[in-house]
Length: 165
Image 1 (cartoon, rainbow, N blue to C red):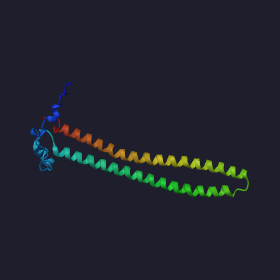
Image 2 (cartoon, rainbow, N blue to C red; image 1 turned 135 degrees about the horizontal axis):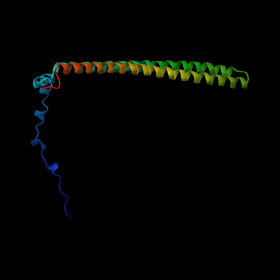
Image 3 (cartoon, rainbow, N blue to C red; image 1 turned 45 degrees about the vertical axis):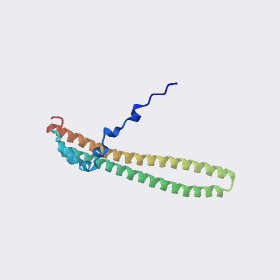
Image 4 (cartoon, helix red, strand yellow; image 1 turned 90 degrees about the horizontal axis):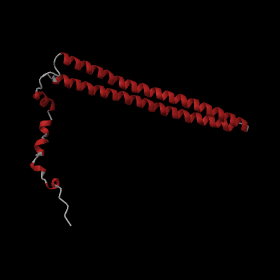
């Protein structure tokens, strides 16, 4: 019986080819903006690119803040709806139990069911509108920044700062 061939990659010593300590020298990585500026790409405005990225991150943070505030408002409203629903259910149950005849109880239950369903539909619509508004506001921040970013890029191209070199 023949012995299976050994995998040559398991026997290789890759440390001979790479010195990770030199590759991952963090002291050189710490000043990345200076390193990028030192590259001096012809026709590239590094400061404008960094400023644009800074604005992009600010817009993203603002959109996230808007979305978080919207979600918090929805959760507060859901909590309020739940509290109101529990109070109203307790009152309606007492009314049903206070009814004298079975016919009155059935009529009260039907009335209660219709009222609860109508309120649930209204609450769902309200919460949906709140979520839609919150999402729209967050996306509006991103959309506005995208428009600004395109204008900045158009300005850099017009000034010959990008794409020529």
